[in-house]
Amino acid sequence: MQVSFTVNGREVTVDAPPNTFLVQAIREHLRLTGTHVGCDTAQCGACTIHVNGRAVKSCNVLVGQMAGAKITTIEGIAQPDGTMHPMQAAFKECHGLQCGFCTPGMVMSAIDLCTHHPKASETEVRELLDGNLCRCTGYQNIVKAVMMGGEAMAAESAKTTAAA
Image 1 (cartoon, rainbow, N blue to C red):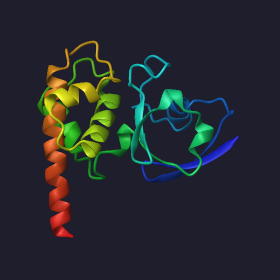
Image 2: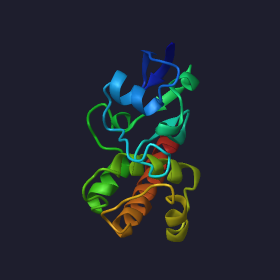
Image 3: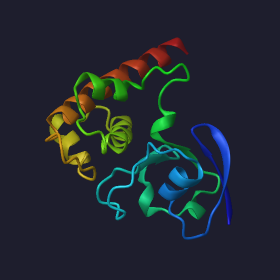
Image 4: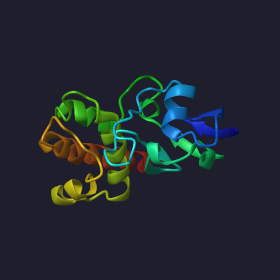
């Protein structure tokens, strides 16, 4: 079956069997390998992307459900000039990663978290990241990065609003 949707601002058409999971289409058909496959059961969050502005675990959604959707993967959040998204910069600054396997999904979830809960407390951040597993960090620096990234996202949003 052929399914057309937008990925990182680019119109694409994927020709895949109807039982193809979105994560497979992203990685194997579109060659966007930043989205990782961890558990294949929507438990770990390594495959988290944004679909129509919301975080979605792409191992749990069929590509056929994406007709007309706007999808953003980790490859699509930096600026065209390569400037990191504020959340990526915060993860780097706060050392919110070790092996890096969970990082793309964690960053995508963190962006969604801060977009929809801009004033989340540290306790709320911990609760809202519940569906993303990290086996290396102990979460301390991840939580610190999400808090810092959220502040930077809010400041960037305020600048954009003031300029408009």
